[in-house]
Length: 454
Image 1 (cartoon, rainbow, N blue to C red):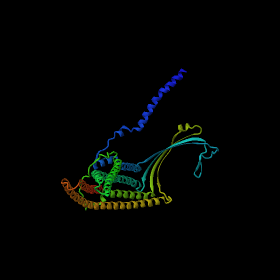
Image 2: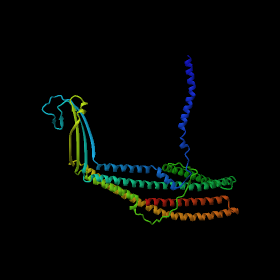
Image 3: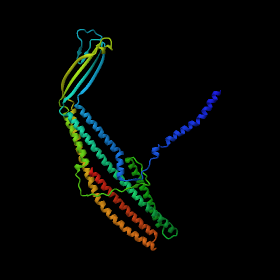
Image 4: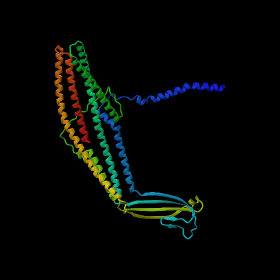
């Protein structure tokens, strides 16, 4: 009885410890690891910084690099055909004979061989073979494997180019959102101030109700614009984090402008010097080598070989087979093999390789056409954006003069604060348009250089 009481008290005392342990375990699951909890948000970026980080983190580049490494193993495989092949064969067998056949040691009917003895037997064979001549199939496979490595390296460079172009587009969206947010915050504050003054005027019955409605609409519109810009910036930063592996402080992020670069819009780049052309040119060479190999597959092949066999047998004991094991025969020779009819398999392989070669040629022409169209479109956009940027700058300068004049009139109490605010809003809206054209122009210059200099 006393033992039962002690056990009961022990379990009662154990319950709090179990509860505490489970609570700590749950807390460990809920709380993120320290390296995630303490991860510092990036508060300032430049394009060169994010590009450098993306080159180490981007998945497409890692995949392209692994494809190159895989292709290099193909060279090792193709080179193995230049070495002799050494093989080992071992067989063991038990034969039970039900008939007494004494006039021959082995009987055969067609491809069936009948051993007339009841016995255990084993054989061990070593074979050495070498491909003496195959009409260049071996060399063709090696050349194709080497070309495949070159093609994969160019694909890596193409992936790097596409990554940079993608980052330019993403960075442009973030930079535009940041600059517009700063300017629209000022517009929002001015609209808020104007709305308060219009509410007082409406309360004093000094303006019609429609004027107040217009001001409420402008205030809500500027508020909606801020929300849209924040969403656009947050979404673009999420994609930037995907490429760089870092987290960014959306609210306090400082973004540097694209470096100003000059570009001659009339400078025409030779497309045969681009990575796009080089990649498809390498793919065409690879397909040509593949077609060459397939065409020679059914030509004669000369192989030299030698074989050495050890044989052992015993009529009643399996272990004694190995004590009886000894040299049986040695042979050396050569073979010339050539398929006569393979069900048109080689013909279909040649047809397939030829069609794939034509396909790659068409893909190359398409890629070059897209490249030329893209460069031409960007070049035209640069001319257009330059004109728009010049016009926007003139408009901003005029509105700055207007804004200065409005302030002087306000100081002389000739106009109200509302009119000064409206002039300031007009100036800010013009600056937003100038920001759009100038940032887009710098991004376009960066993009066209990326597209033509790889």
